[in-house]
Image (tube, rainbow, N blue to C red; front, side, top):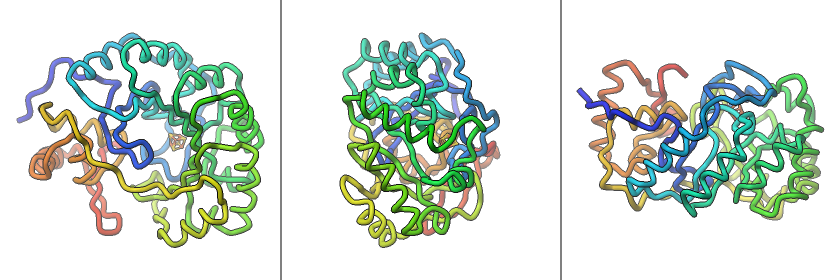
Length: 316
Ligand code: SF4
């Protein structure tokens, strides 16, 4: 039986290997799962509360205290990434949180956002405190936006794009736009051409093409082959890249990992044994031991995706 760590951080996870950010130490500042969207590809599962109303969801000082504790354990990360179990810009304390992180560490701060609230000046000002903002844009047309992202009613594609354009005008940090592609839904050449019009207006520092390498909220969303992604990347042109493989962890090997650490990773997203090994800096034997314990307690399930088995938290 696993010993339970008394004061385990509840709002910090990882570092996890991110295909976009290297080793990412995540801060989860929105309860599962409140979001302005209910994307069909979401790795967290279905949105349980769809809302565009910002809220004061948790005591930011607790998050900062947890971060201080984790950093004090010598954990290495390439980014402190604000995101987690919903849309982080829904948290009204976002700016305050970034100010607090700056006082604790020089590690760069990233925000993973769906970008839907960037039409608001307050959200833009808070996001502008970060070093890197990674918003999403998966559609150019309203019907595709509705089909892929299933937005709350008062978010339109026009509002999303104009917010992104305005934010780019104001933000001097790095803006990496993620485009999630679903075969047969938003990958036709004419759809990519329309998307490119928006991207050219937004002028991100990078465009990152992603597809469903991990199990999604809805079934039947398959990953796209590299060759097709390369054709789309060429069509978009400019700073467009296909999101690559995750790197290896280099530090925090001395930290004792438990099945609860594995479960904490899997609550956020499905992971392979390799992801768990890299994210927690443990060997496959140790990862498999924790997986077996979690499966025996019926806390996780597995799912095949191509040649890889992914492990998912059972509540997904
Ligand atoms: S992918 Fe992001 S924006 Fe879409 S539903 Fe999930 S948390 Fe929300």
